[in-house]
Image 1 (cartoon, helix red, strand yellow):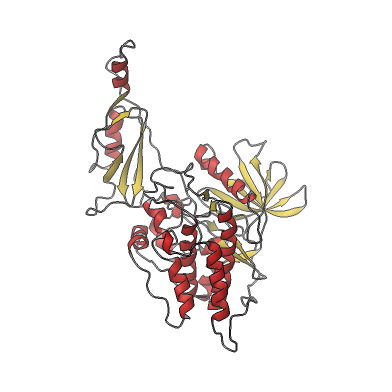
Image 2: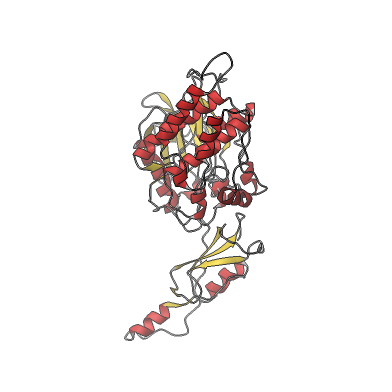
Length: 460
């Protein structure tokens, strides 16, 4: 849409703030209530996708159901009656800058600032967790700091109630690779402990100026999240602060802080105990002086328990109109707005801070081969046999060839998906390493068949 366009006859679009694979965020103006707002629009490419529409609706409903000083208020959600395919979320417009921008500009933050920001984030997450909502994409780009030092948590677009996987697809990974918890990568149960892990990565980056796990591509980052201990933090840090962060980064969820409330309390205790020049403890007064930024939005973006891979789009951070990148360098080769691994990125309605978003798994449908003859309706066994058959083994085949082969045999819903769960020698770029259902399983010709290649790149 263009500058000056009206959404639902009420919300004027004034300035594009950010764009990504799942949508675009605008600084807008509510003509009825005469106030500035943030308007997020579902991307044109996803308007026909039921899953994308469901995720978009979940963004609005999740935020609308949460109330707290560290959250963004949702004003409106709906479908433009004049453009039936245009879906929108209208939210509070927050003037601020992302924590990612602060880290980029300054290299690292002080212990005082880090404990204050991490503590404030933990308090907001505690509110969400009490309401059964797990954020799943905590990172510096989704933490916005206003000019008075107040912090907002944005981008609940891929959040879900604990144990809820209704919007999950096999092959999806929801989250941003540099900050994602091990259980999100391995397909384990995702709880509030995943947010605590991600917040620990944020704290580590604030205090050291680097992320704990860095690799040439997202696969390497994912492997380190699953199997490596983070490098030691600087020895100059107070031991209590180092211990606080490292506990967040434990691989096992049960070994981390028992709750976001406990982490927030630990941040307060560490702040009171940590020495600073000229004093005996850390002051609670803000020390960060933020330049007045252009209005930034952070649009609330979008989930997976079987999470075997990462949909590229989700690794794409939002691309703000101004130069405020979130440095999702670890996912550079897999970046593609929306993804998985997009987790990518999204924005919440609040600032232009980049945020990873997820995108749809590519689905290819091949027409079934013509039947040699029709089954006898009077013979149930013959009818069943005509509708299903033993699935052949396509492991080792090229993805495109495997899909074409299955299609030629009659399977109409063959999906090529990425996976990170493969321990053998490195396969060819698009070589199939696993399939669901397994070979020789009786599978209906209309049932979904998922064939997986190793990695986070795109395969046709």
